[in-house]
Every structure is written in C-alpha cells, then in structure tokens.
Image 1: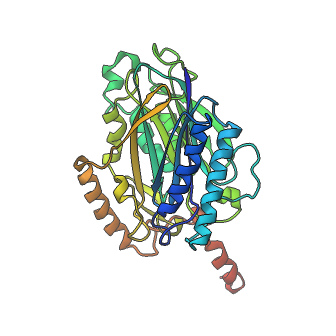
Image 2: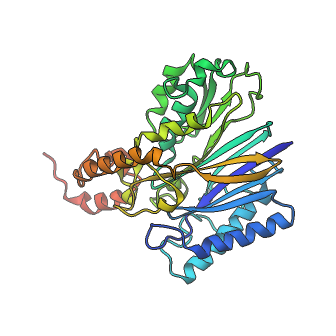
Image 3: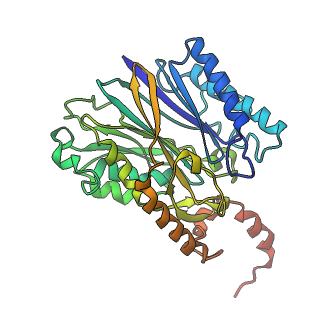
Length: 370
C-alpha cells in the first residue's frame, strides 16, 4: 500500500517573541486534524511545536502536493493565526505570505517535506525539524547519512547499500536542479553542497541497483522554501524540516542520528543574520532563548503501520547527545564574542536578504569618491 507522509510547518505566531508555540495553537491544530482523520482525509497525524514553528505531521493515501491535504494545512495555519492575533502573539501569521490558497502551499510561505512510498515490512521514519536556520543546514548531515562511510558503515558493510545513493540538488538562486550519484560523483556533490546558502539537497534516492527499494522512490526529502524569495524581503528564517527513512537497505537509525552529534555551524540565529551551532534537543528544550537560539534541531521517530504513526520517540531527548549540546554552548560562546563582526555575522552577500539594505540606502548619499 502506497502511503504519503507529509510534514508541513509554519510560524503563525511566537510566544514570547520568537521563542515557542503557544499551547492554544497546537490545540487548534489537533482539533482540525482530528476532524480530518474522522472524515477519512487523513490516516493519522501528530502536532508538534519546535521553536516558534507549528509542525503538522500527517499520513494519507493522496500523494504529494495533494490539494486537499495542503488546503487542510493552510486552513489549520489560518485558524491558528486568528488565535495568535487574539493573543497578540509575536509575528502572527508570519509565514503565511500570500492571502489566497492556490492548489497547494508551495510558494505561500509554509515549509513542506513529503514522501510517497510503498510501506516495507518494517518502516522507520524520522521527522527532523529545525528552527532559526535555513534549508542548507541539512546539507552536511544528509550527506553524512547517505554518502559518508565514516558516519554510515552500512555503505561498506551492507551489500544493499554498496552501490550508493542519488542526490537531487537544487540551485535555489537559479531555480535549477541536478542529480548526482555517489560514490562516483562524490567530489562534484561536495563542490556544490558546501555552498549551502545556494545549493541544497532536496531529495535522496536509492541507486538503480538497489534490491529492495525502487530507485524512483525517495528515501529522504528536505523543505527548500526560501521566505525572502516569496516575500521580496527578509521576513524570518526558513526553519527547514526533513523526512528520512531508515533500516532494511537504508542507513540504520543510529547512522541517521549520528551526524547531529556534531553541532556544525549553520546560518540564521538572531535576526536570520548570524552563524551559530545547531543544537540537537528534545521537544522539552525546543525553545529559542539565548540570542534567539542557538539554532535547534528535533528528531521524532516513528514506525509506520498501514499509515498509522506508531510513536513518536523523542530521539534527541537522550544523554548520548549531552556532549553535542555542551559543545554547542561552547561554540555559541565563541561566536558571540565576535559581536557584529564576520564570521559570526553573515557575509555581505547573504546580508542583502536581511534588513541591511535599508541601512545602506540611508547612507547611500554619504559615500564619497576616494
């Protein structure tokens, strides 16, 4: 049976500031998705809050980019926005950048990650949710999961993975994509995805020789919506999400989680204008505090059973990631001591998508020729 797993998120109001999601917003989402489940639109669902983002995790049989599912998400976000406005929550409706729903939520502000696949005998799936960063923040961990044998020994040990994976990489400036196969085109892949503000991994597929999973069936997907491209100006960071399937010819659960034991530097943090460490946390710690951060990532693990979501397990709520959290705090200390200087502040070419151009416009007439 083909199942679609949809993870759709939006910032519809923070409490307080950009810190977290108010319980009333999650209650409204639970109510609306619960009604959709009773009506047979959804098989199952879960609602979560990560930072100031309301997260909708849904299973159904309608395929990706389905109008009915996307309309349900849009209506849920709109209803939550009305509550946010009544409570005067910060940035109410921030990610709902267009007024009219037009068939799906792509290009309207919310972030979307969707997978459609034939359920295996055992189907573990991990939903990753980041706050205060951009889609390129997933480049390093997704590469390590599916391309780095130092992270994923299954690439060497497991014969079903020995032929590698295919990475779909998007150029989010020129709106183009390219498919690169590992290990053959590994260096080409790294040449692109190291420039994480422009080239982002969108999907990962098994090789054509994979004995268990059809090569056209994605095994990982990342949201790549860029808010500034939709709004025409800086309105907040993109706060990406991702879905990753695991086990049985794919990286094991521990191999999928292992890259996050290293709190690598990502762009975003305060005012979307700073580099800082990504900290793996459980849901209880998924609130943005220090300098509106540091950026966080949550991992919720599920088993799928005929579309039903068995779980979640809050995977980073584990002392095994205490070392990564301590290191993230040390990195945050180090980066903060730079104040408004690079490399803590983003380089100039990335600052052009923030509010800095308004400062430059103010000073334009005061520059003199030397």
